Length: 152
Image (tube, rainbow, N blue to C red; front, side, top):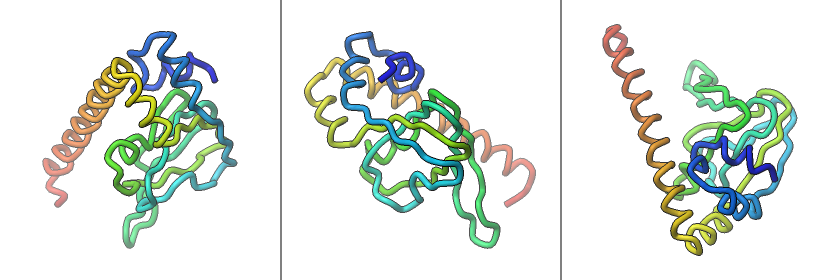
């Protein structure tokens, strides 16, 4: 597992070389051909993903409209972490937008690592909070723009 790739992922950006090595030990690699569903909204969230190669489309199904793409993730992007932390169902679909290589970490392995190494856990959780705050701010700004156009 490439520690440089892990370091690019927002939730692992604060980790030192030794900590990245411990995370790398629990990583697996998965390949998805273009168009294949990685996970669907409503499924249990049992792993997080990091894009190693290719692009991943994050989307939702909108009744009466079909698929709405929310973002296209590039190498180094992490996704699926919300369900790993909160144990709720997936909130979106993830689809291989191109042929992809993804690094995955299963929730049980991740939880054991976080329980075992409290300093690593603190760094990861701080990064997750920062990432979720950024996403919430972006969502708030999108909502503000939407409402200011009178489209409600």
